[in-house]
Amino acid sequence: MSPVETAPPNCNEPTSGGLLSESGAQLPKLEELKLTSDYLREPLASELENEASHFTNAAVQILKFHGSYQQSNRDHRHRDWGMMLRLRSPGGRIPAQLYLALDKLADRYGNGTLRATTRQAFQLHGIPKQDLRTVLGTIVRNLGSTLSACGDINRNVMAPAAPYATASYPAARRLADDVAALLTPQAAMGAYLDLWVDGDMRYRLRSTPKVRKVNRQAGPPAVHSGDGEEPLYGSRYLPRKFKVGVTVPGDNSIDLLTQDVGLVVSTDTLGRLVGVNVYVGGGMGRTHNKEETFARIAEPLGYVQGNQVLDLVKAIVALQRDHGDRTSRRHARLKYLIHDRGMAWFKACLTNYFHGDILPLRKESTRRQNHYLGWQRQGDGLWFVGLPVLTGRVAGPLKETLGDLVKRYQLEVRLTPNQDILLCGIESRQKREIQDRLDAIGLQRATMVEPTGAHGIACPALPTCGLAITESERIFPHVLARLDGLCQSLGIRQPLLVRMTGCPNGCARPYMAEVGLVGSASGHYQLWLGGTPGLTTLARPVLNRLPLADLETVLHPLLSHWVQTAPKQSFGDFCQNYTPEQLGDLLGTS
Image (cartoon, rainbow, N blue to C red; front, side, top):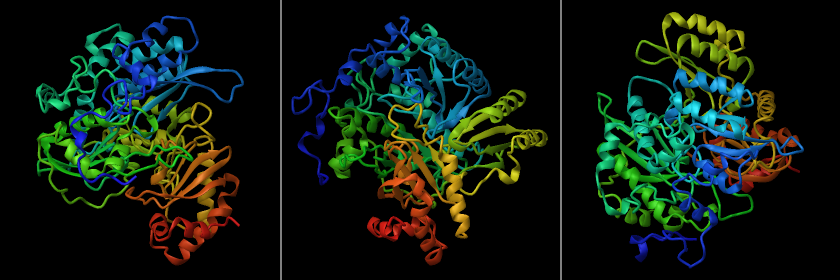
């Protein structure tokens, strides 16, 4: 479909505001379920009181807004119900008190592991339904929250994990906190506290003064949902999930262009927020054999002054609330609205929601993917150490060591978008003792950064994800070892950016990788090539069904051609010199 380049006549009218679509067709049951849920209470509240081992589908849909998915272990012949619980932690910040609580909860109620996600949050797996209230209530009482970590709402707000006290990093972290508070649902917060901590208002998330001031402002009438209880979202919330990331110029650790809204801060010499470059319409999710679904990178909207950025974020959310497609969940993300209607339409429609000035983009530094691994200075007399955690799974000796270190030194934990862990706030006199403990579990200084493993990420997939087509996390270390071995045999020293998922939904953002493996059948993967190390270019599909057993055979000729013809280029940039068809011809697929 060609984008419309001018605002259509109905730009002032919502396209999906009622229970009927523009065509008069009944909207999906989930839209009605949200409307009748009493701001995300029912039927979840009722089913929490019964003795069933699992929730009904209706309760599961509401449970997602509270940060939990119902899962079963697909390795078992019989249904083995358990809940996955995901935290909402802007910028990946986990206070020591919260980390220690999670550590104990995972052992007592979960499967004994914690998992760092690609959106800087922890997940607990395998929690029985009857223990969910205890676990979630404990998280809330220990400074954590899971509200809107899942569901049709703004998800965890990403920001650079590094605790640098200089440059623009503090401003980016503050803005991420402000956006997270701004987009916290108001009525749903009441339901959340009612269900999990008996309505104890002491645990209500506190907004910053800036956010409270913005919320008091009337703003353009279109921003208000018309619902006095849930003024921004309304009683049906958003058509689908919504993702926001904040970063500083040059630091693309958050995969800026994969966000619905990406913000790049500008600060003055004192580190105060001056303005923000804004990007809109990114998203990774797609469905195999459904060409109307696709990965898309965000495109620039413009630059706004610092005192207008929160108003603009609210405006974009409100626009998506009113105009996002509620008739088809596959077509409901902001990226499809912008793709179908065009950026000119989007900007014209946005004037109904935002009365500030959108200026041309400010120049930014070249983007790079930062990892923050190893020992680094925070800038305030303290240190942090970045620990590689392949696939984000914290278990065994690593889990025991982290728990001991956090407890002894009261260290803040931060999670990176690369599923790694930073231990922060370390005094110089503590460094040696901490490194000795890390040495004991194989995390010596020299081995904290591995050639490919330091870059790769994978989704959980089997056995817990109900959408998984094939394996990802469990075989990813072996896949990386095979690729490392292949590269070593060819004399390749540049690390490859490798990402793997068990299905096309894109949770590990494989469509931005130099080598993306996307599950298409048992033991088979789509092969995507050509993402760039700075995470600025989409990869492209080259093979639809690559048997994983043939990985080295297929990639060897292409990697050999790269190292012989363009060894100074990154592999992703090299692949961008060719069409997908030409890349296919260079693969060993005969």
